[in-house]
Length: 219
Image (cartoon, rainbow, N blue to C red; front, side):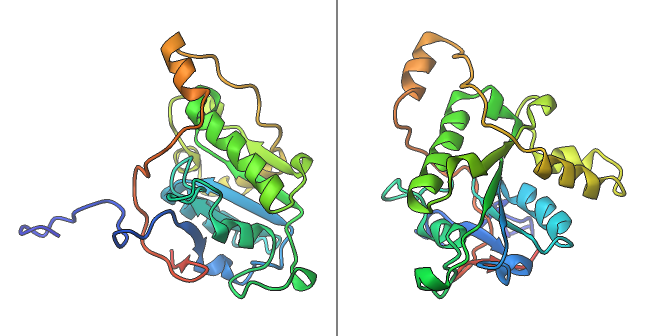
């Protein structure tokens, strides 16, 4: 907080801690035991998904810090924590014979996945990385489309606008109805197209609370 008691920074983590994969504490015991992994973009969006998935033991929710937050900031490769979660190796890095890899991955990015080529590229890159590094078949990697929300709205915005009693069913329907990534968005202009068709470096736009080891955090 500042000298007047006002909080400084919306999300905070130690310097140099890099990209973090958020595994909520309530989900930690599900690593290596569930069939469906739900990867959510954004901290508040992850909180919303965690609350609604809590009653379904077949679902494991983890969060990434923005659309490129699944990559290691130094290597630009997929964060090893996410590989361990998806492959079922968990915090103890179980041997392959003891691991329980997920059978289905559902990715929930914000609405601009349908309009922003950089966000679409991040989603496509995540799909490829899960396939190559975690051995998840491409046909088992699905996407929830929130394009109908418009702009950059996310899962938390959508659920927050609905009656609390409806949210559980809405979330279930979104996850069960997840489908293909969809076509790359049309370029806004030619210069933007040329920049986003290449490998894109990124900066984390916000920092979630710090999490350690297989990086769990209470919500």
